[in-house]
Length: 247
Image 1 (cartoon, rainbow, N blue to C red):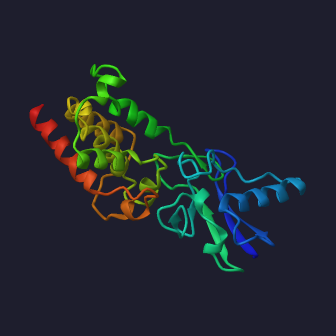
Image 2 (image 1 turned 90 degrees about the horizontal axis):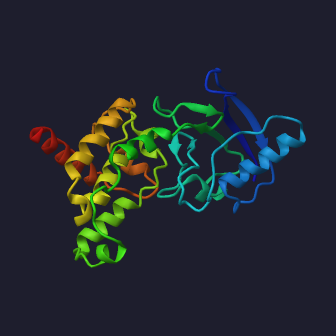
Image 3 (image 1 turned 90 degrees about the vertical axis):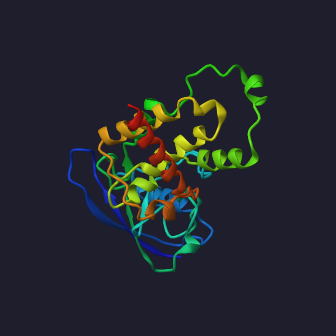
């Protein structure tokens, strides 16, 4: 398979970016998208050119680092996958593929397709943890938790913090990410004690960092590689409003 790639190139955060066009040939349909970029970079290096910078780590859909906008879709045309799980068989021979970094004021471009996502870390540091004493691991395991609550907590905890929700949202909102983190703890007895403080602190930090507001378009849910439900956003809003009333 042969492809024409329109890739966003930007030397650093302060430079003006631009699209550059490259061609790759004889790509197997079973090649992953990141492997295809590896092939391109190998070609560029042999030509004495600067390779395309892109983020990756586990390449197993776990770490969330492979954050790319492909043909206008977060992580590409497949559903419930990350970019590293996308394969070239999802495209047609001869296709032109446009590859961009996440577009969000809260995720500034570092170089080419790599963006700075430390804003998520700062939101987690504001409240995405349990600070009350719940005893050791054996003590925690003895606390009875209903099956439904445990399942919902685990579904929310599946969020990998890739940022697709922010990049997809027309407002650049991080509400789905924050809601998933809050729900994963709020549905457990150990996390309920600090639920209101956590919701208030994390939303306040989200606003401080320049993320937009949620207007319920559900674009985040549609593009989330882990299919996180916006029902978690409803829970987050309830907790946040209660915390404000109590304050």
